[in-house]
Amino acid sequence: MGIGPGDLRVLFALRRSGVENPRRPTDLFQSLLVTSGAVTKQVDRLVSEGLVERLPDPSYQRGSLIRLTRRGVKVADAAIEAICSNETSIGSAISSLSPQDRDHGRIFLQKLLAKFEEVGGGEAEAPVKETWPSRPPQSTKVKPSSGRLSSGVSSTPRNIRG
Image (cartoon, helix red, strand yellow):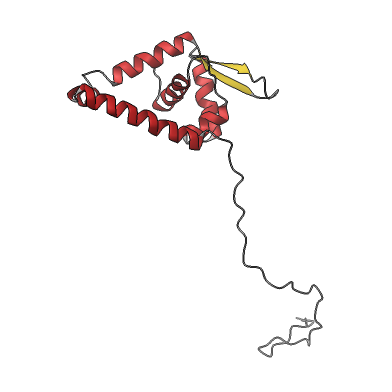
């Protein structure tokens, strides 16, 4: 099974929120900074792989919640272990730190992640409507024309006979 990086991000986001805390697709696309269509495709792939499941949203009849399956939890945990193993550059860098530095880093990253999710996890704000500088209302009345353009050329059509 080949899971792409985008699909892994969805698994990790669900894993961070906890197995018993399913997320709305809206929460996922806002926190992952991707489009709603991207999350829909990723969730569809993960459902077909048996890694997540869609549940009805009790607070919104037409909505759904996305939850990791047991298999999804195992895959997410195995991916984290693989990424952090000493055989990867991230794992080697982490293992070279003192236990105290690793603990400080973990605390910092948890706080940073919480702030990102706090900012991105809320309801989307309405887009700001751009407004142009207001102009005085223009009259809809048509001014009578003299039949001449400013260049002196007549704007009145002429019959052309050939």
